[in-house]
Length: 264
Image (cartoon, rainbow, N blue to C red; front, side, top):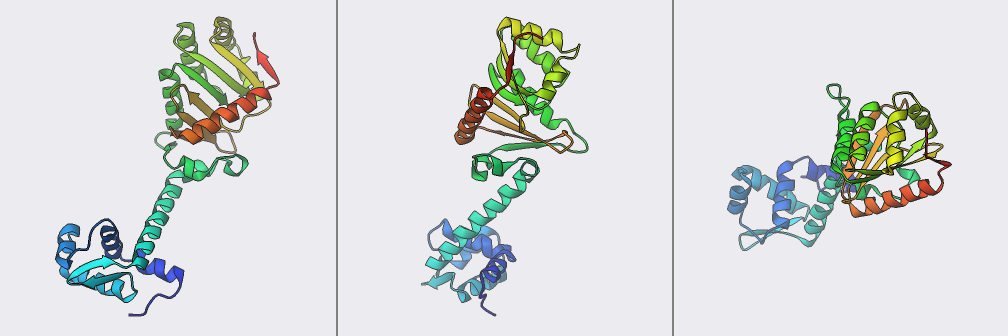
């Protein structure tokens, strides 16, 4: 068998045979084992284990001593790096519907901080899934801070009911376009009453970059829209770094707000 010589060749050599990956991953988490133990633990055939070990030994990633198989020092580095790469690719795949529309380069946050987040995305059968996730936070939290790049009547009615009942306090920042929306006749009575109770603080900026929701228990939501303003995906996370970043970003926008609405 030809020995792989380049990095890409090595990655292809390992990844194109699942049995090689499984054997190396198993060996990385265990003491040296026999071929039979490998077959039993991984439910692989005798021939598959034998072929895989022969090829891995030929490239210097495993070795056999006294009937027991173990990783070489190089093999330990290879499988650790490969599994990290696999995790990175998995994260990229999971986050791609969100990252397609999130302006990551414009904000002081790393992809690694987002990897534990739960992504809710639109689909042909459920285009309102992100909106429902957003409503869930508004329905269950006691204190909310956030940005709204758009405003719908259903969510406004829910927030109105909870604020008037004394169950909810909110501080929100909206774009000037949303300010125009809430001056509509269906919204004005709701917002005037919410503001008058002291349960809603409403500030206006020229624009907001995305939907942002922060509750009192450490959860952050970030919702992204396409170029036409239609919601595409929502990320929800309890990552502390993301939460601190969201609080700082909210404070920054609050300081730069052009006005605070006290009456519509």
